[in-house]
Image (cartoon, rainbow, N blue to C red; front, top):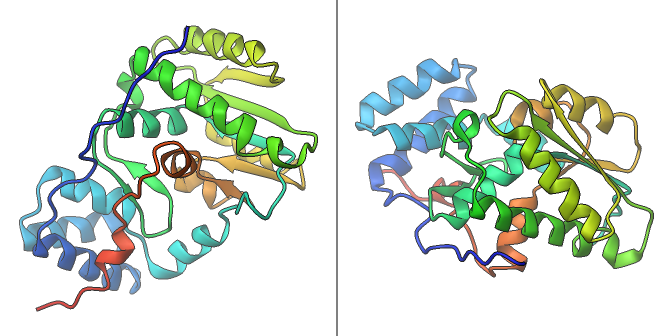
Length: 249
């Protein structure tokens, strides 16, 4: 039985002029190699930013060269083949859940879709998770191998410290099997290292994640939430990069 879960409308805070200026200031300081945490505190205090606004800065704003390098690793699925997809499971599913639940979701300065939900350690396996798995499987079927019928392998890694990870893995395996998709679903302590290692073993591979630690250490990346939001819901996400184009007073 399919689970239907529609996204609500609001996915971004009502950003004021001070927040937009804080992004510009933060980038300028990061480009001068100021430490990120201390700089966010400095900028946040200057503009009286709240917790969520500071989290957007932390999750979505980077020095200009670093953002450019990560952006260049994004795979254009309309032009490039992927023969091996390695998925950072909770990273992808939690971002999709945040979108479906109408929580704050945005396009970061490096082009990747991120959220500030903080659900990682407290993630709850719910109907919404089931809907996100449907969307993930839809991506695997139509967003990749379905186009050119090339051999396609999938690995999904889940964090064992997260509650009910084993149950989620079993559910994922059954869903994939029902769709005749061969995939490896693993529950391990350190998925980041596994995604990075497996990505290095295949020339035509891509890691599906928005985790900067992983992105910085792999060659190519796929942003599954970005693809789903555009192709399934036909929506655009608020882009932090666009905010930097305003003029400061």
